[in-house]
Amino acid sequence: MKTVGIIAEYNPFHNGHLYHIRESRRLTGAGYVVVVMSGDFVQRGGPALADKYTRTRMALCGGADLVLELPACFSCASAEYFAGGALALLDGLGVIDFLSFGSECGDASALMECASILLKEPPVYRAALRKAQKEGMTFPAARKEALSACLSSESSLSSKILDSPNNILGAEYCRALLANNSRIQPVTIPRKGSGYHNLQLPSGAGDTAAFASASAVRNALAVSDVFPDNLSSQLPDCSLSLLRKLYSAGRLVSEEDFSQIIHYRLLQASSPDDLMPFLDMTPDLARRIMNLLPEYTGYAEFLSLLKTKQVTLTRVRRCLLHLLLDIRTSDIRRDGLTFEVPYARILGFKKSASPLLREIKTSGNLPLITKVADAASQLHDHGLQMLQKDIRASEIYHCICQAKSPGHIYNEYRISPVIV
Figure 1 (cartoon, one colour):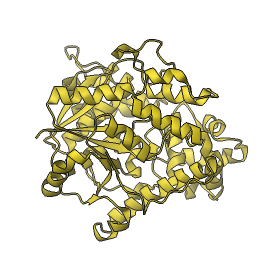
Figure 2 (tube, one colour):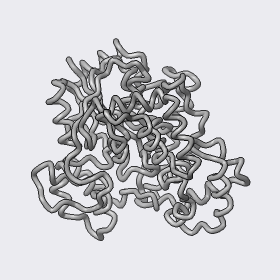
Figure 3 (cartoon, helix red, strand yellow):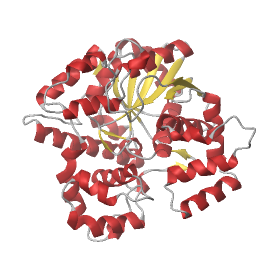
């Protein structure tokens, strides 16, 4: 039975995601869909709108057969780490035949060509990258310049391929496939509907052109005093029902909810050196954080103070989140260009996926974690340390949920996977 893997955040799960799962099955002929999903914090450097178990139920109702948690060390990291960690997890299952992802270009061969350059980093690439960074470009802009320098006039590949966020992630997925010498085949589905950063809900409904972005769904919930009725055309029934429930309970989460706790965590640092062990931190940013800390009045305002021409807003978000979640550079192990993921934690599955779980136990090389309380007997030091980061992340997330919704109780050691 063929199996297709998907790397996702589902923040939240909307009609575009439903379309992607259905198209992935159709194009690959897969009988099972395995999703590696971010936990309670996501790749842009902030909290997920809804907790990981709510989003897992959305995914299972939307067509996924098995949902696994991408460890927090990777889920809120840069595209290279996010893609590399997720692919290492999928590879370790031993059953994945295809990796399906959305992209603006819809051309897997072009993304593989781009990925090959990014992986090999030929001398002309490295020289152009250094030159662009010395000129003050951000890393994403410098990388685009370096890619352009590697392309001949006859090449069908365009450096503009890295202008679009899903293309960037797609190229990283392909690079991870090449780095791992993976047998998994890439399949990309052209992104339909609104752009990734578009904050407006489409006025139409019922076709792919009317798919809203997840950003637009989150924005609609953030700016409305009541649950927006027009979301019914953008979300599957299960997602709509679950979001309504969280909305009514006051448990939809935003990055501004973390303003005070991040401020408190920053105040624990006495010097820039105290910030340097954390993933993505640089000496310049650490000094800037400490110098501007007395001006902290709120999370959004502090982000705008820290952003510079050389450091993107997303990079700053990730650095502050890594500090909050205690994610350090040393927490991520890699062997050359490949990353180590020591376990696969199950967030949920369909009852009909039991044969798939049995096959993973037979063919995979990763322990399957269903209950945190049992993990000590399955994992060694590094695996346990990484799992503790996941537990810490969810406990911090639900600390905020408890403040927003008194009486909310959550215990990572007692919760069981979602089964539908």
